[in-house]
Image (tube, rainbow, N blue to C red):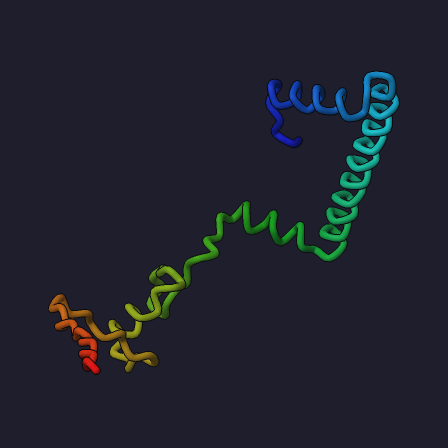
Length: 126
């Protein structure tokens, strides 16, 4: 649940024994256990409520149908029946001869611009 290794758990127990004290350790451990049980029960009830709401609204059936049919959510079908990635709109515009809605970014040149150097003004002697 918390991804704690055995050595880390032993360090936590040692620190707890020092801070809480060996006499009160069983009482505190019992209270911590009860809190964890309540937390697990509340999270289980919450998940159950979400699953019931998904069944009532039909979302669960739609998700199951999508998974059964193997529908690709990131593809679109053009008028010719070809599947394409949904984000490849620019390629479709070029193939169909449609004027692009967005101008392409200018190409970067490899030539470096000359750096302008600042010259400090010379101090006049008084």
